[in-house]
Length: 159
Image 1: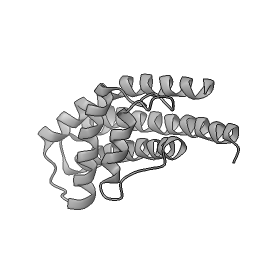
Image 2: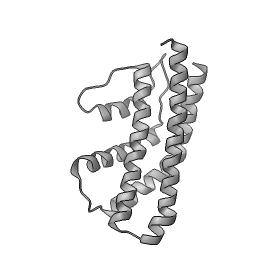
Image 3: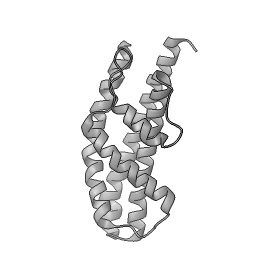
Image 4: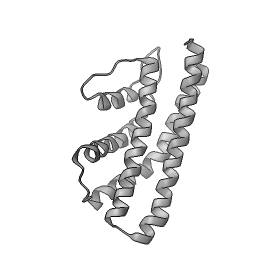
């Protein structure tokens, strides 16, 4: 694939990912407004919030993987999920700016830990204190990530 075509594909993937993340953000808003307000802190509402958190991070990780493949194409075999996130914080001089800010990165570290826990421990008795913390972090993440992705998309368009 020609470089210009590959860049256009990556820009298109950014647009798709942004739309998916916005959709998940709306699902979160509905969860807060409808489900949590009506049902309260129940296993069903905890499970739905957990789904949203997991899917949100996974959608973002997929985008990060595409960036990594386009620019670097090297991740460690073991612990590649964390390696990928770490690389998104790095500016690669002469290649690309950082994809996410330090503040975004710190929040994403919390989400990746939760996703790992949810995927591998299958626990259904969620700790509402932890979920409240993750909700706060997710709400902090929305504007930070929007700014980071807009900045990186601008970089891609002039690349």
